Image (cartoon, rainbow, N blue to C red; front, side):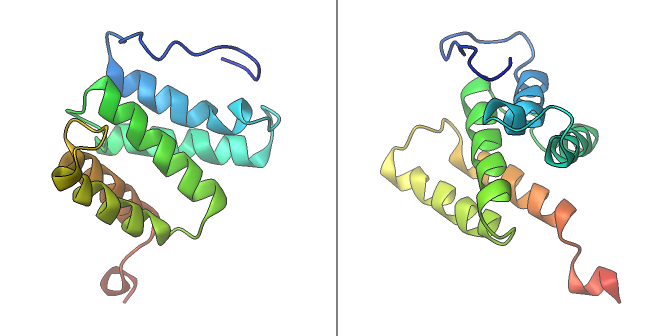
Length: 125
């Protein structure tokens, strides 16, 4: 999908995790960045890492799509630590009846991405 293409929100892919990772990798281009831009390459690398690490494994299309949209936005527009705030909001949806089917699992995926991107202080020692 390139800028200006439509995206069918009702389509449920055969492999929701792979399609969600592809969506994440294409997010900079979808919002208008050049396909060969540095940010596009970074997102492709992060998507590949999330795939290798199984960050989205077990999520259905609704939740995988929601997770990558939130992660992509937060990484592009906010400090990386905001991923943890986002995970807290997602956990709160358990009681609020939000759009996620399994908000705790989605929050765990967001936290896993954060932990992959930001090494802990202990690991740095």
